[in-house]
Length: 137
Image 1: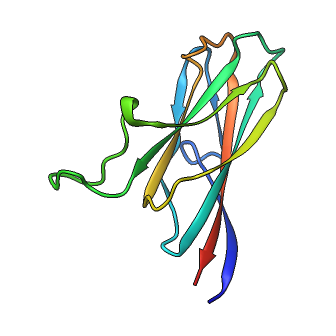
Image 2: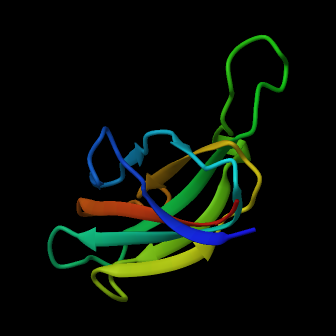
């Protein structure tokens, strides 16, 4: 059995990054992890558009889907109350600020939700992410 590593860029409306407006949010496009993925981590980045204010903080959340829980529709993703907090990045501490955190497995699909509303961010902040998968085939 070979162990390999693969990188998957998280996209936001087919772009590698998105701008989270002051107090706003952005949800990434759907990402599908490879069926042979046995371990994964995500690198998250927040880059302030100007000189950071004290409240220029981005919360990154994970919206997971492993299937259709009620069998009545297509795959359903975690909603606001069920999202998993991945990281809180404060661009006032470092700009840009980057962190890498493990992803829980074995979800089939995921989205990344980035928001500045919790902190009431003052400035637009550019967010991006990439996933590194360890695969066994």
